[in-house]
Length: 255
Image (tube, rainbow, N blue to C red; front, side, top):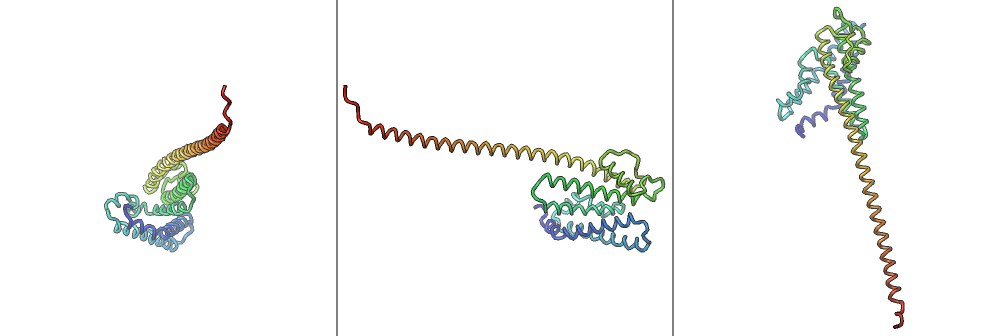
């Protein structure tokens, strides 16, 4: 493995980070959807989100420290770095909860179509839900906003992630547009993943069918060869009996 120390660290903190991500998402959802929170409660929830974000930052720093090639690690984890550095993207750290999909996937049986269904459904639902929360949080109090309720945010998310883009709802704030740009890229990537997964599934099934047909043909040839061997053995036995009878038959009298 390229980075065995990071892999060992990831295995150790996989479940704790998944739990933190789930807590982050739950707290963030409560904070966004519950409008009747008192200022003190809102600040307490902010403190919880900040604490979890800092723990995620510690995880990132530990992984850098464990990496043999640190510059390469930073270059291949730019999104994690941006989420930690840019305050406007900080709520999107809840996307770390996609680890749950990987954990659940490891529990599934070795069925490729099942894994594709879990990945696609889980990723679309999770990304869409978090994007709806983030855009609602950024937009609902902005002047001239067209996304002011969670239902409108969900509708906007569906039309954006599917690349349809009706244009009836759109973000007007910088934060909302950052969320929109991220979701657009995610939508294109998801379409590519779905297309590649379906094509790969078809190829896998075609190869499996061809392998089964070849195996059946090989089995039939082996069975035919076995039967031919049995027939040859019987023919040899018949020839031996005929030869024995021929030797035991008296010679005809001379003319």
